[in-house]
Length: 295
Image (cartoon, rainbow, N blue to C red; front, side):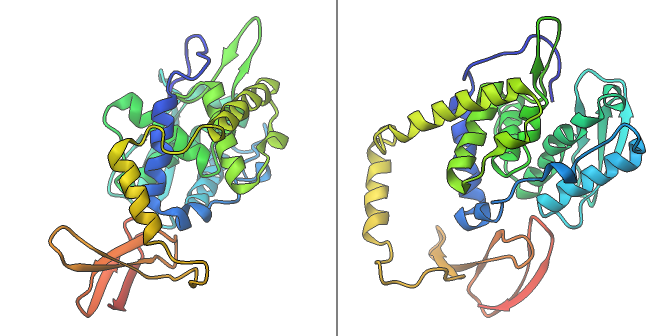
């Protein structure tokens, strides 16, 4: 998580950001993404100068774990001198060691932003979702944290004036604003009321303008021949207007031709796919809930 050098502006990573949003929907499903309709509330990550440093950091980390629905993930927070803003050790869990830069001892209001990014690393690790390359993977992490309701803190940590500047994360301020705007258009949520940084609000306005331009583009222009054929196929086989909605089970076939059933985890709503073979026992890869069911 970078926090040094001049602040980059514009949309240099826009293609990767769009790929990251698509990857989230593919891995989580539309229904699971919809469970993140409410963002992390400012009051839940507030950190005053009189609060105990370590207890306060643990409290904010637990709030991120709760928001991402990782009930058995236990972050352990420490502080040390380092180049980056923060770092997390990704293991099998349930304990995850997160190191924060010593500067957060005196910049406590930004601890929530750092932990939003680092706990998202744990979430994506549990999902086994990653991009090739360190920078691409960090962009995926920033995008996922922002789109799933915690990354507004990362944009609010951006401050810049004639004498100094600060920005957390790998996205530019305008790209953070873009992802927040895409989220706002889906969930009808206005994150700008939470910003304490005027520069964050300006970046959000620019990001919203870019997101609005996306809506004006013709559909499937970049999909190619195969993508348009797939879209036409899905439309032909989609349920009609009178079909029931909200059916929890979905069936599909794998490459070997065997039938599989998928259903949402009752704890975190991540979809679980198992073969149709009578009674099965499955463990959710995200929250580790063990389920037994008849298929």
